[in-house]
Image 1 (cartoon, one colour):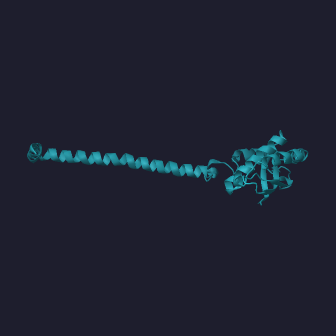
Image 2: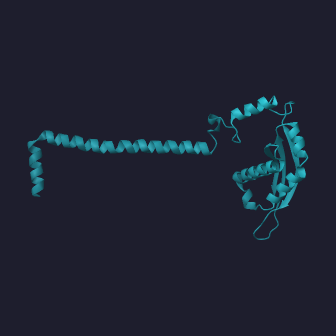
Image 3: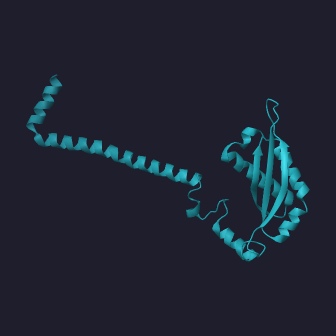
Length: 191
């Protein structure tokens, strides 16, 4: 109590000291909020940018196409093959793989089936001929992989995307050194 009395007496005697203390207090409070606000805005911007990047919405701005190939790579491929379609007739080179039906792995023994029809997109007529020659090997690679799948592996767009990337990897392994551009789904039926 004696300390409070001494402080109030000092403040009464020196009004400039009281104003200085109030200004210091206001600066301390305001100075602490500004870095927090700036930090919060930066975190928010980084979160939005990360979300846009990982959902693929920034691909157009970053010069990427749907499959991670840059526009410069696509233009280079067009230079190599004339019009970018490979065969010079305005359409791509597509090769249909015969429909594949396989049993899916189930934990409870219930029979489940997958029927799949795909087409392969190739760069040129020469690539198409090379892949046609090894179709039995491609079908074997596909069936071996598909028989290990479970129904839950195929759920949602992420499951279908994983299936597509696995099939593309496997067909490129079987067709090497020929490069298959894409695996295009024609039919996916799970029973």
